[in-house]
Length: 186
Image (cartoon, rainbow, N blue to C red; front, side, top):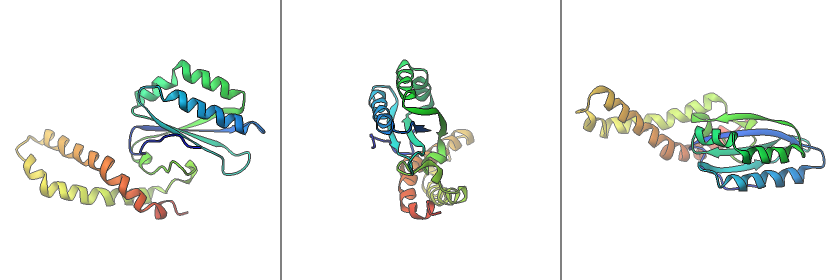
């Protein structure tokens, strides 16, 4: 079952993979959902999702999103996390394996798909270029002339900040769903 999630283009996302003990799957899922509900009170928590295993006995994936790395770090050392991980230890088989997703990789993460089904890097590079080329071209044509009065470093900093903002919140959230079938095709 899902809990509220954020856009993959924001913050940091960590995926934990872990098996439930045989016969403890419903308890494991209930505890993970309880942990999500408790985490909602934390500053910087953006959302979470539980992805069940593809086959019986497989690994669950727990996706948690935080606004910043500092928010994730705060969660990692919290008493709340320790409490929920202690409860989960009773129904889980072993310790979780973690994977942190940030930057470009997080743009291409499907919240509803297993993490091991990420698009190949060359496809991610193609989609990224497809977004950057027109964005930079339009900014060079229409914004850069207005920035010409600034010294080189402030002009470059402002220009690149605009590219990142437009790509992160404007272009990539629209481009990835448009090419989803091609990106995630085996």
